[in-house]
Length: 184
Image (cartoon, rainbow, N blue to C red):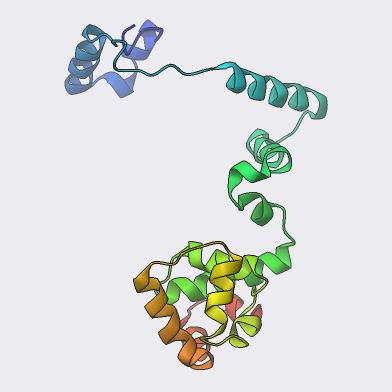
């Protein structure tokens, strides 16, 4: 099987493929053959079943926005496979705004979104609830989230929660988005 097998000839004549380098690359790809060692066996049956099911649901509901429908479908039927995304997608918009402020707060303090999600999933999803925490609370949140924070992140968190109120004040003062101040 060649890398370009199945492509229609008019694709090669499109403006995207007018470049000599692109033509040359496509020619080289056509010459290459995949060997058994290049690809692993992949069972397409679950993929076909998923797309068949999505197609059936779409035929029934005739959605105006196909992409949004597919995301809704996946969030509704496969939430565990989406690692928390479905809870964000399906949440109350006002609560979600407060959670986004918490995420921005952690990013502002050079901590990843993943750590912010540990706090929001533990119920600390507003700046007010974050302000109620202290250094001793961190181990409970880490345990509840079934996470193991990296040493550098732990140090940053410990330092931040030594004086969390001051960090929140600085965040609110330095943030250019006034809408963030109202929600948390």
